[in-house]
Image (tube, rainbow, N blue to C red; front, side, top):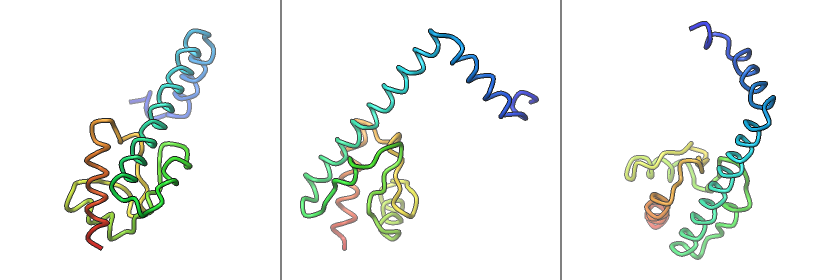
Length: 120
């Protein structure tokens, strides 16, 4: 318990350990490249899937944004419909965690978004 009751100290020691060892730092940097590349790849895949299904809408914001999250442009009622009918979870603002998008779920995600948009 004491270890986790003081997260700033624990985090600082962890960072010092990783950045203080050339091999660990090299591994950590490679992990960052791998993860950021995977997220960028999923952004491309989601954009392509949405453009194929809903071509009359501009989806370029999916790939022009950076980071782990993407604003989808969906409204709060659309997000709630996705949640209720398709079990797709994101913030009511339409903010989606790109880290949760995978090769295995990007197509069903795009199908769900298309279905919700069709209903309007």
